[in-house]
Image (cartoon, rainbow, N blue to C red; front, side, top):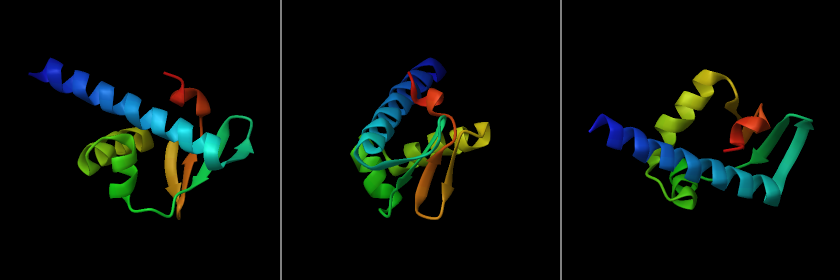
Length: 88
């Protein structure tokens, strides 16, 4: 059961990363060569819907990435401090 859960979270993480890459192409703003920010004034539920995951799954995965230090919120901006982490 743990293996299935890990696989599901891996798939969800890929969906979220893909959504972030799409949003970066549409409205990303470079901070430096490794970092981008995206203005996202939408509720987290809308972001989860865009990615095709539940709000809870989005929150869990993004919390993990925040703990790893490469993604964080700055007001309504989502900051991706290490773009290489989105390369999956």
